[in-house]
Amino acid sequence: MTFAGALATLSLMMAQPTDQPPPGQPVVQLAQGVLAGRADDTVAAFKNIPYAAPPVAELRWRPPGAAPTWEGQRDASTYGPICIQATPQGDPGVGPLPMSEDCLNLNVWRPTDVASPAPVMVWIHGGGLVNGSGTAALYDGSHLARQGMVVVTLNYRLGRLGFFDHPALAAERPADEAAGNYGLMDVIAALQWVRANIAAFGGDPANVTIFGESAGGAIVTRMMIAPPARGLFDRAIVQSGLGRELQTPLDRRGAYDLPSARERGEVWAHGHNLVTAADLRAAPVELLLTPAPVFANGDLSLIDGKIVPATVEATFRAGRQAPVPMVIGTNSAEFWWMKPTDRNGYGMIDDDLTWLERASITAAYGGEAGFDRGFITDAVFSEPARRLARLHTAAGHPAYLYRFDISSPDNPEPHGGATHAIERPYVFGTLPLLPYPVREADVAASAAMMGYWTAFSRSGDPNGVGRPDWPITGVGDTQLMLFRNDGPSATPVPDGARLDLIERFRERPHTISKSPQAPVKTHY
Image (tube, rainbow, N blue to C red; front, side, top):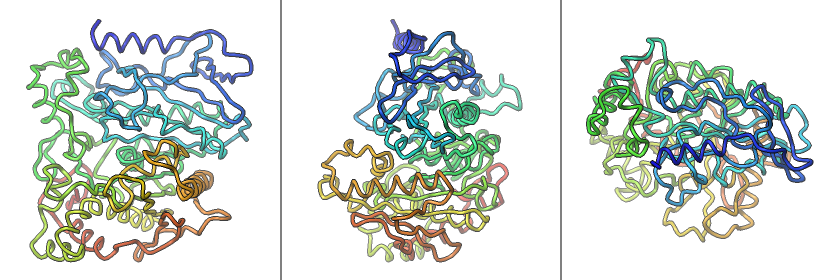
């Protein structure tokens, strides 16, 4: 049996309706059919729920189709397949095998004594748009459900299956069909499913918070600017979600005169002797992974004109984002290992610095060593987060900025702060998955973050009794909530002077191509 055939068989076996659940286990009736979940004394879970048609065969590189139905009771006690990606290498955000193209499933946790209607939190996983899933133990929704939330995690198409275009595909699709950003279309389909079905689980379809980290946070910002996503959520939390990342137009050259997504797809396909749309749809999935596309280089962050109309920053600057409360923040040492000289999209950021800009910014870091250590973290994460928070406030919408700076002495990485993605187990209450011993400070920090996140999900305001007050972001001098080993506290944005220098550099005109519907000065 081929690799693809084995995956399809495993997926089909997992999707079949099964016998009755054990007595006392939860059952939910949907329009699709009956789900039989599993529960303990406090939380009920329903897993591997299909929210769209399997995107296989002729539906590969098509918008997600209608969710399937079934007869009898469907066993929702175990996770479904994760989406196609490179073989996991110990990443705790990936989740268990099998993997399959038939992966558009989601999972729901609710309190067993849910006070209907309960706030809903929909998690969008990270992984550079090439790996990860909603099934990882790291994202177990049980702990947030015990705080009174209904929690949803989901899978979306990754890599070339999720973010791709080619002239042969463009030639055969209707002119009004969205293209390229299939992974984002999947997320929108999942949010539509939540609006239509979450009440059956005790959730409030009129109180939905989307939250995500890294590439998942970047998807949240795209949901904020995507016209088809408007009205599908009521609050947004962006964890390390960038904001000024290199974005590639679907059918025209973009920043730095780099090739369009369609040109990149054609070059890749030519290297594998794939010419027609039929060739592409018949290609084995393992071929699509070689070589891997790169988020930092703009291979996967596409401006398609329908789902993503322009760059994230330009859309926020124009005030066209969703008018919902937003939490946004970063970690203190996100990409501490990456230097401006690295040959990728992040390393290109400083290429347009004038000698005076470089001298001023380097001096703000205390010299070349500090610049090499901190510039990428600030330019990719810290400054864009502050910028989007201020722009959201300027548009008249509540924004709350944070920085996560909790660092254990047992962490073996020489990072000098909180590295990228380390905040995830604090948000989900899955601290035992940390790669070092859990301290009392970690437990307290997790309780504080879960308290702020769930309060925000309930009301759009993270504040509550017993926690330090989290101020709304200002248009000018900005304060944030700083999470440190000794507890959270409101403070002026750390290193604001060097962020000001980076912002001035990023805001001046650069010689790059215009994006659809963006102002003349397109920022990258």
